[in-house]
Amino acid sequence: MNLFSCCMTRYLLIFKLVFLTFLTYGQDVFSEQESRRYAHYLIDQGKYDKALDEFERIFFLGGLAVNDIQSAMHSSLCADSYEDGLTFYELTRSEASFNPMLHSTFLDLLLYDRQLSKFIENFNDMNQPEDPARNLHYHVLTNNWNAYDAALQDYHFNAVSLDPFYDRLSAEHDQLRFKSTFLAASFSTLIPGTGKIYTGEWKDGIFSMLAIGIISWQTYRIFKKDGQGSIISWAGVGLGGVFYLSNIYGSARSAITVNQKIYQQLHEKVDRHRLPCPSL
Image 1 (tube, rainbow, N blue to C red):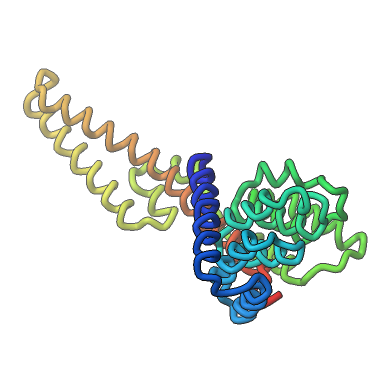
Image 2 (cartoon, one colour):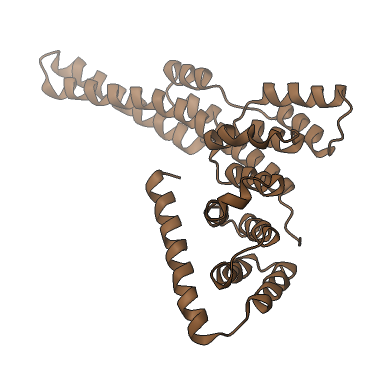
């Protein structure tokens, strides 16, 4: 998420909070205590986005207690509204920065919002004990599986209690077949289109093979008929060259795209596993 979109999200949330303040004082539908009860009821019902609205109301009715902030940040995790949760944390920074529980949820929000550099900056704050699951989650999101396996072995060596899920995830990763960009490009260099076939893009691969083959054959025929002085023959050489180089580049990009999709599936799997969303 770029800086502009992050800022816009926060400004919109602040505007929404101010609007709800005027609306609340104008209508006085719920007291602060009733809004708090209703917010927790919504969490129990799994309606996290609506619970967030109630916590926004509570914030301007009388301020959020630490438990309210934790509940609001938790709700933002479960509602995929990570920026809202981060904004709650920033607006209550004087309390949240000294609370290990809130700081822990703050780190999770950074992970789920993919603010990995900021996660590292804040990782060692508060001198909290390391959370093995969060540490492994980070290694998965950075695609650093050597660090993941090393950390996993270290936790087992030190008898750290871990969910078996993380061992299964490591085994699953080891069995996955990632595509080599070098092989994809090499195949298409030797025989156009075969690199894309190697990455699973059969239609594009066959199209590239036929297109380059037809252009090359037609260019050869024109050269043979009209000689090297023909403009059309040289245009064919240029067109064929563009198709040929594009086929090599496209094959390498195809391998990268396939690998990114595999990594994305692993990211989503560990995201879902670590997200505790039935209720607080």
